[in-house]
Each structure stands twice: as structure tokens, then as C-alpha cells.
Image 1 (cartoon, rainbow, N blue to C red):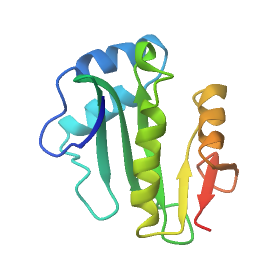
Image 2 (image 1 turned 90 degrees about the vertical axis):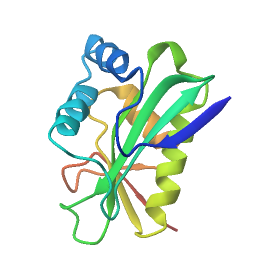
Image 3 (image 1 turned 180 degrees about the vertical axis):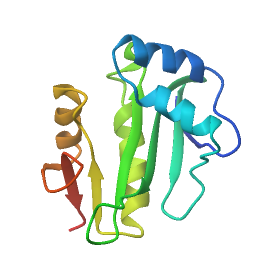
Length: 145
């Protein structure tokens, strides 16, 4: 059973393992999330969200959304997105992305992502409906129809 939980006060149990697994793959975004969390960033502002995905009670992944300051119109960036390797291909990433996309489109018409980490990241976001775009500090955009 997959459960998405909004994170406010503390990072979920198992987050340290997520950081270690991401770092082992050469992905820095979970370490960056840990650093910003220690500095007091809580994803509670307007247009911000931090979601954790649990699969059968185990932390499977995390995804966040923040305002996109580089865009010329109000927009949101999906970021700090990671799913544990052993729990991939089970719908976790798609569920996280879908929840963040729906929440983002509740208030803006443009979403961005930076998928420079890997070809697999770019393919994933394109499968969610994002299109390649080099018009800003992002790699992909999705516009609300």
C-alpha cells in the first residue's frame, strides 16, 4: 500500500538511509534537502510542499515543490525528488509527481523541473507530461492546458 504524507516538523524515519542511497548513486539532492532542513527550511510557505511516500510503511521516496523565481510568470518547481532504488518501478515516483503536479496547478499554470541528474530523470519527467525547455535554469516545463 502506497501512502503520501506531507512533511512539516521533522524528516521521516529512514531519511538518513535515503540520503545515503542517493549519495551512493551520485545524487546530491537528498543531502541538499538535509542541509536546508538543518538550516530551518520547512516547505510551509505559499507554493511549497514536501511529500514523503511510504510503501508498506517504509520510506520509499520524497518530492518537494517551491516557487520558481526565475520564471517570468507565477510558477512552481518540482525538486528534491528521489525514490530508493529497491522501491522503484512500483508507482512511487509517479504518485509523488502526480500529487505535486496537481497541487502546483491549483495555483499556477507553469511547472518546471531540473532533470540534469540523468537521462532517466529526463525520461521520467517527459513521461509525466513535461517538455524539454532550455529557457531558464530548468530542463523541462509543463503548462496547464
